[in-house]
Image (tube, rainbow, N blue to C red):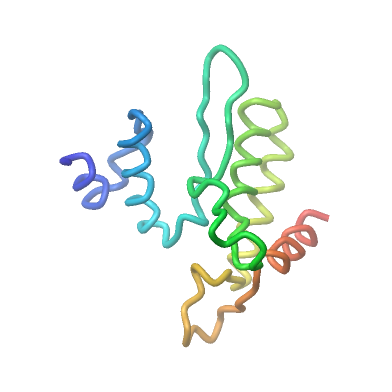
Length: 138
C-alpha cells in the first residue's frame, strides 16, 4: 500500500516498477490518473527469452467496442515500444511517437481526455484520431 501512496506522492521517483499481475493492475490503474487516462498508457511485458507482449494498459476495452470512443494513443505508443525493443526499428518507433506528440500538441483530444470549456481542444473519436495520426506519419 505504501508503493501506491508513493506513486501518487512522488511519481518521478519511479523509473520501473516490477510487480505481480494483480498489484501491477492496481498500480497501473492508479498511475493512469497521473497521465489523465488509461488511454494514454502503453505497456509491455518483456521477457529475456523471447518476444514481448505490447498492449495498452487498458487492454482491449470490450465495453466500448464499436462506439468510436476509444483512445488509440496507448496502442500506437505500445506499437512504438514493440518497434524499439523487439523489432529493432527505432526510426519507426520515433515516427509513431512523433505522430502522437503532434496530435496532442495540435490540441486534438479523444473523449477520455477532452475538457469541456478548453477553447484549444478539438474533440474527436477513435477513427478520426487514427486519421490524424496517419497524416502525421505520412
